[in-house]
Amino acid sequence: MCDTSNLALGAILGQRVGVGKSVHVIAYTSQTMDPTQQNYTTIEKELLAIVFSLDKFCAYLLGSKIVVFFDHAALKFLLKKPNTKLRLIRWLLLLQEFDIKIRDKNSVENSVADHLSRIGRESEPMPIREEFPNEQLLHITTPPPWFKHLSFHQRNRCYIKKNSEVMLNTTSGMILTYGYSSVIKCILEAEINSVFQLYHAAPRGRHYGSTQTTRKVLDCGLYWPTIFRDAYQFVSTCNKCQKAEMAITRRHEMPQQPILFCEVFDVWGIDFMGPFPVSNGYSYILLFVDYVSKLVEAIATKTNDAKVVVDFLKSNIFCRFGVPKVLISDQGSDFYNRAMSSLLHKYGVMHIVATGHHPQTNGQAEVFNREIKKTLQKMTNPSRKDWS
Image (cartoon, rainbow, N blue to C red; front, side):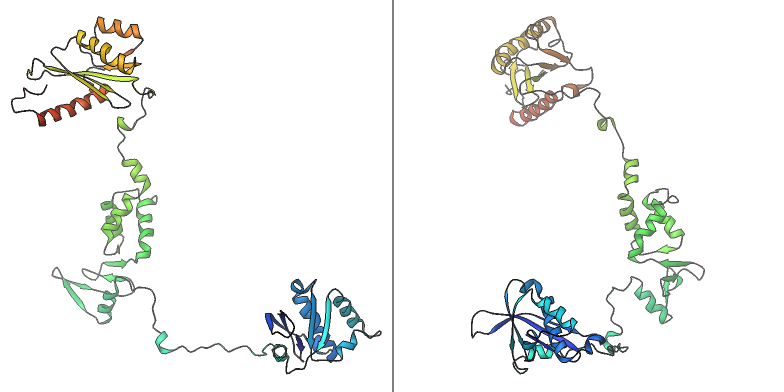
């Protein structure tokens, strides 16, 4: 449905499901004519409205059957007129791309398109309102600063006694305190980070601690209530300060020897515990611990000699868990002797002897020694003679 007036063009794109049913509107459009188009004749304006609507909705209409409703009956005969203006001939050539049929419809039934065609541009723009309601004049969305109460006292010329001295509060972010010579600027929350960047992280800041940084800020005449807490938080999150002050011990250094990669039951630690109070003839505990699975094998023994260790290796470790690759022990004569060396050499086991006064070499065995001792202390009688 299309219509035109002396000022504008109007069109409606709709779809009808069946004969005699209502039209479902898809889109509305209108356009104001320029001064040249306003000088067209009535029939030219009517045809211009059809050309405008087909160009506007070309994506929807191309390849479909189109029925154009218009309230100008003479337009139907224009398509059959042989001699006409070149502009109208050019428009008629554009219409031949569509499967179009024009039907007459009076302006009463075509009221919506007629209304769209009469919407034109306003010659005078809407005036700007320079007046605002009274309730919006003092409407503040941002929270007030922390020194708001100081501004109130200064406005009322109010003096507060503090530590037997007179303190005068002022506005606009400035406060006169402890006499009339010291002027301190009140800092807003949004400016705190930039202040610490200047007096701590900048080249002139030298990355001092929180106390020294706070002193520098106060000496420069800046203040806010939480300055000490904010300074501590800022310094504690400074990357350069944390890297420089972190104590690097030997524990954080790279290991001097490569880390040993092993399987279960490949590395065993061995150690003797005792002597304990004699219990059923036993005075010592021989302990074996696997470094990977943390499996512990322990047995009570009467002596702590090499024969006991060799017999336990053959009867319990080698035959049950296989021949290990490494055996770790201290420098005791019960582990570091000829019988032990010949047995380990026969089966191809590497014997690692801990450094003197350095029990961390056989750390797993020392850990389980401590755990077994704690367990025995809790479970035995006060006489300590029933531990076996």
